Image 1 (cartoon, rainbow, N blue to C red):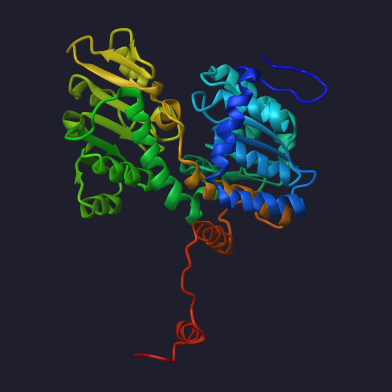
Image 2 (image 1 turned 120 degrees about the horizontal axis):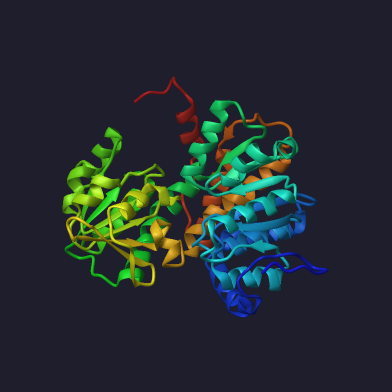
Length: 426
C-alpha cells in the first residue's frame, strides 16, 4: 500500500524485494554502457536541475537505469507503470529503497489502480512527461488543462503513442512540444526490431514451452516490430506468415521471403499469432471463430485492444487458466479452443523480462538526451511532434560502437568535397 514518511511516497507490492531488484538493476547496467556514459556526464553537468519528470514506462531493470540517469542529472522523478502487467516488483522496490525514487506500480494492478497512479503522477505538476503510449499526456490534456500550460514538453517511447500525439496535434489540442523518441534511428531500428523480436519469442516460449519449429506463426503487421518477430521466428524454425494493410510493407515481407495473405485466410492456418500493429481489433470475432483448435494468440503491440477479447469471451465458455499467463477460451458452438497469452497484453513483459538491456541502452539514451534537449530549448519549440536532431542519433550510435570496441571509417576531405559538389561527375 501507499506509504507516507519523511522521505517519499510510493505504491508498490513489497519493499522487502529491494535487494533482489538491486542485483538485477546492476546486472542490466553492465549491458548499458551508453547510458552509463551519459549518467556520468549528467552527474557533472546537472542539466536537469530543478526539473520535475513523470516517467510512465515499463518498470524494468533497464527503466531503473534510466531513472538513475535522470536523477544524476538533477531531475526529481516519479515513475508509474505504462502497462498493468509489465512491472517488475523487485525493481520497483529497489528504486524506492536504494535510490529514493518514488514508484507507483504493481504487477497485475487493476485498471482503476493504473488510472489512480496516472493522476497521482500528474498531481505532482511535472515539467516533463516521459510517456509510453501517451496515456499520461492524454489524461493531462483532458483533465489537467491548467497544468498543461507549464509543461516544458513530453517524450514518447512507442509508435502507438506517436500516433496519438499526431492526432492531438491535428486536433489542435497540444499545448507543448513532444519528442518522438521512437522515431530516432537508434531507437526503432534496434529496439523495435531486435528487442521486440527476441523478447516476444522469449515470452511465448516461457508461457507455453511449445516448440516453434515446424509451426505456422502469423505476424500481424510488418513494421519494425513485425520484422523483428518474423526474423527471429524463422530463426527458430517456424513457418512465418505475414498479414498487412500497407502494400509497400506487404511487398517488403514478400521480398524478405515470407508468405503474405489476408487475416481471414491466415486465421485458418496459424498455430501461433502475434499482433504488432498498434491498431484496434486486428484479430476480431470472425478470425477467432475460424482458428484451429489450440491456436495460441498473443500481442506484442502496446495495448491489448489489438485482440477483440470481449468478442472472444462472448463466443466462448468461461476462460480457464491452463498455465501462468495462459488462458483457454473454448468456443461454445465449435468446441475449438483458443489460448490467449498474458491477457492480451505485451507478452514480452507479461511472461518474460522485456527487451535485453543492451538494446534498451540506446533507447533510453535517447530518452535521457531528449529530456535534456527539451530543457535546453525550453520555450523555443513549436507545440508539434519533433524528432531528435540527427547529431544526437549519431552521438548515441558512436558511443555504442565505442563501447563495443568497434572502429569505423571517416570521410576524407576529398570525399566530403565530392559529396557536396555538383560540378564533379564520373
